[in-house]
Amino acid sequence: MRGVFWRQYLDWALLNVPFYLQPTLLTLWTIFFFFFAAPARRALVSNLRFVVPGSSRFANHFRAFRTLWNFAWTISEASNYKLTKAEYTYDVIGEDLLAQLATARGAIVLTAHMGSYDLGAALFAQKFHREIRMVRAPEPDTLTERHLVSSVEQSGAGAVKVDYSSAGALLSFDLLSALRRGEIVSIQGDRVIPGVTHARGRLFGQSIAIPSGPFTLGLVAQVPVYPLFIVRAGYRHYKIVVRPPIVAQRSTAIGRDGAIDDAVARWCAVLEQLIAEHWDQWFALVPAFESDAIS
Image 1 (cartoon, rainbow, N blue to C red):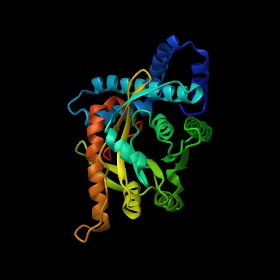
Image 2: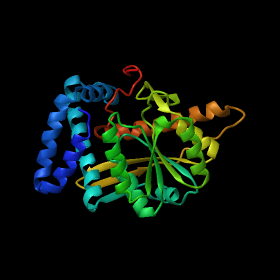
Image 3: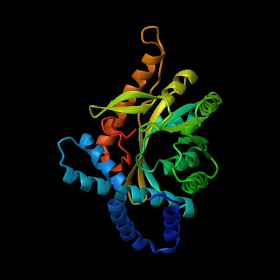
Image 4: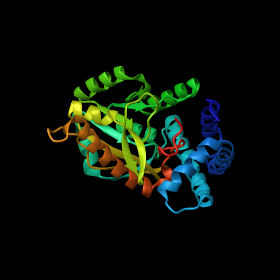
């Protein structure tokens, strides 16, 4: 179910289909993808058995459908913002922390595949007049990737720049320089791609691979890592959830590796709490836990 066609069709529908018909259309497309995007459905069901322990496989299929339905809404609203600059409302949980982040002289935003992180970056850049370097994994389809990058940069009015996590060591040096210049770097910290350095974390009692790059960058650049999540709360309404920063600090007792492991453990604790509260917005469309992961 890959290809840029689906994104282009979504843009067309948002501009040509009456708004009162769009919820029905989104539900129909969710049903379509639920049955025909089998790998994503299976991954969601598999992940949910750890997130919601004791739940039946039958119930987790309904939860997977609800997650895909939320996913449809979030990508739709992000596209709508890009195309029409429609007004969105949001509540902030951790407003003082968000203010700290907005004025920080160099910081890392660590988020997850949850809610509308692309829309969140655009709204943050617009509200605080700060540029953001967004690091993301490239899409398998080249045309889809170009469409998504164009959408993100257009939504952010040029204040959001996209980098790729597959770029390797050169990207690490570039991001380190950006942090030392006082810029903000946004990274997703709940999934790794082949070739990216990672650490072992624990989530819902299971082993999970967590990108170690954000914490290594924070340690070397001596900047805080802010866990931040964008959660959909209703029609064109979102919650921005900011948690206290994670600061990786090396000491003679634990050393560099120990400092990173400690930071990963603290991130996993925050991530687990948010996923438990908003499991229907954790868009983990591939197996997340190492016991199920496909290498």
